[in-house]
Length: 124
Length: 225
Ligand SMILES: Nc1nc2c(ncn2[C@@H]2O[C@H](COP(=O)(O)OP(=O)(O)OP(=O)(O)O)[C@@H](O)[C@H]2O)c(=O)[nH]1
Ligand SMILES: [Mg+2]
Ligand SMILES: [Zn+2]
Image (cartoon, rainbow over all chains, first blue to last red):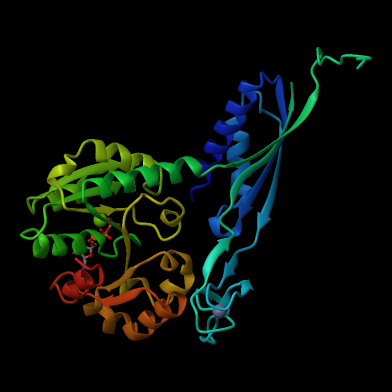
């Protein structure tokens, strides 16, 4: 739902970087996006194409690496995937919780909310 | 030292530039500035999130009625294009600033920052920020508020919570509204509250009816107001 807003930020940031370096064109943009950002990669690509038209980013390749959600328990040190609840037989999608899978602690989200421009390949 | 050759990239050369740039950094930074500004002026701030039509405005109205003798209250109201909610709330005699987000489905720290500049913060003790009705996006765009409340209602059916777990992970308080309609909707309010507690054991869950005001005092207590 917020792909438009985020992608325009991405394009803006890359353009600024390219201008700073007086790049002739941008060939590749590498993103790292956490799955907890709920960005649909297809929609990000669609927006990217729209927003880069008539810029030095036009036609550049967009590489998206998706990152899984990671939680950490401050109490027992557990680090990894969420604990899921799935107690409604009619409902097959497991629901993540902040309960620690190992102890009775409450975990913190430490990964999966990334939204990074990792690397840009440009012709300078 | 002898330099054998100097290579110049006259025709243009391809460079890999490692950026590692956080796209949401700008929002996070502004959110932090908003928080500091509010703290400096002793303004308590509450972000009101939740689904479309769940009762966010109604809950703010009820809280304003109960709290306006104790606090000087201001309300920011994010809406796509209209000022309907802002007008409804301003009837209660508090300052309301409408923030039109245009096509965006959420408020962001920059919009809130602009609204804060319009407000005489010395004259405010408590700020409610009603976000655009949405259970997915607002959580990625912190505004800088002190606490977050999520409002859902039984009319959205029994699976609203398990379908949108992440918005509840960031909530301090969750109001399950329109409990007067629970029976007609065949929704078990206790089960819905249990789902919230399983997802986020630290959230306070309150059942409310914002028509009658039932549960509003508990929401106020849970927000420590
Ligand atoms: N029956 C019943 N109706 C309610 C309750 N709370 C709110 N409503 C009604 O639900 C409708 C929507 O309420 P609002 O407070 O405008 O909801 P909102 O979340 O602010 O809506 P948006 O800002 O448009 O997303 C209004 O007609 C309210 O009168 C409740 O507890 N019970
Ligand atoms: Mg409203
Ligand atoms: Zn643990």
